[in-house]
Length: 309
Image (cartoon, rainbow, N blue to C red; front, side, top):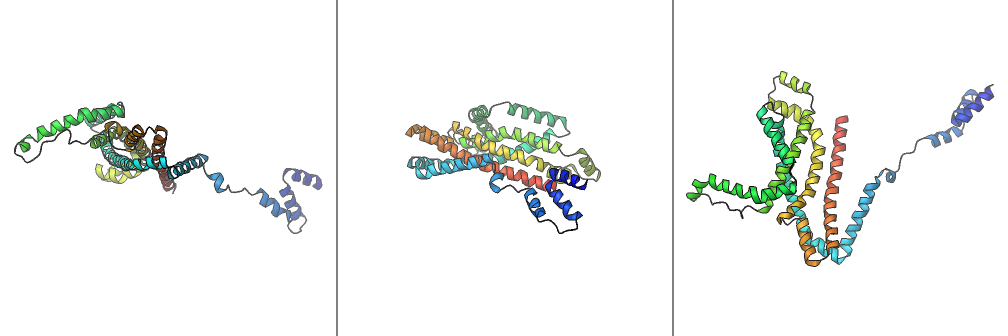
């Protein structure tokens, strides 16, 4: 009977059968137990198997692009012409995104305010701006809003202009790069306002009521209770919007701003090397956006680890 049971155990799990034999007979542990334990232990995946294949493919494309730029004189010449546009693209993006974040925060606070007039105005602003394509709004700001702002400035400062204290503003003095920054700021502020609103409303009402019951003012309640918790929800989508603005900044080339896209168009139209030129343009944008995307992913993981702790 014991042998029959042993056979059945061996058929199911050989390691358990060897273990039962060693323990039942009072003998030393069977050496095969060590082999069974080593073979049944789960193996840790290797570093190569843990790497995402899409990232390896992107790294391969980056290496090929970098090799083409360094080895081919044509690509090298085009790359040198476009490097100046990288600084313009990044500068426009940083300034516009910073201003859009501040404006979006103000609109989000108005959207979540207890005053109905502020809520209605903020909602109207968000719905109107989000319903207009960025390129159309860019043209509207550049050729409609900018002359109107110059005229309004001269009208308000008319007494000072007459006395010679302030020089009158001109449309040509309103640089197109600042018109583009203003347009991107207004457009993205509507989307960022919704991100802030979602993060603020994600904080439980019980915490806000508890803070108010302790005597905290609305400003202290927002600064100490609401905003630190909402920041964890806000940061990842804000990073994604920043990456999107890097790509959408190419639209400012329609106004003649000397960014990567504009310099690429000028280079391709003069040399007729459209294939090579736009390969370099795509390479530069991919390098910036993928690097920023990886940083956003790292930030998300860091925030998740902070929350779990």
